[in-house]
Image (tube, rainbow, N blue to C red):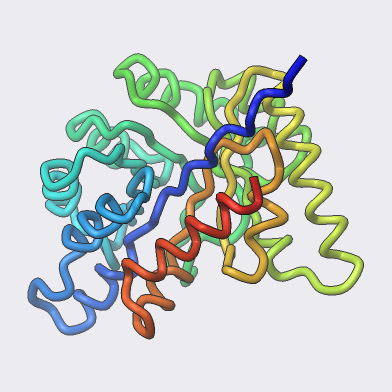
Length: 246
């Protein structure tokens, strides 16, 4: 039997930090909506935007504008709060990725403790699922967190790749194995595994080669590279590296 060709690995581009630059001076430039349109034009598969409690980058009105400007699915990163659930239910993004959020952090640090917060998360996940919003949980690559996602009825997990991205020496192989094993465990349990955080041109290919992964979400690095080469070139190169790994 001829083996099936590997499926395309989707690339979701997080445009938060376009909005960070905009907000640093106030006004409307640079516009994250324009970034979303560029991503759509050069082969990105989705737009990720994190609406934080303090609105430090993406603003509420950006969500509507992004949805109206492109046909790409919107992945709304959000904290597990009543306010954010209400916003998700109002905007109906394609997906809602529940992440841990602390106001004092610079960016999302570590994965969501889905296992330890089951009772708090269960009603929120149920409401999002009932509304037809695809729920994802941003978790550490650990068996207990995969099991918690299964109990919560989340169809997707996004594996936190930060430990892998920051690993050195022998730890790199160890962290990559954790990601590989947990992607396989998620798939075995009927959960679609995604991954993201800290991925760069230099470290993305071993993760992209994990066959069970369906999507990578990458933001800060691509926006940073865009300063030097432009967003179109930045996204295209990441897309090429991901495709080559498959």
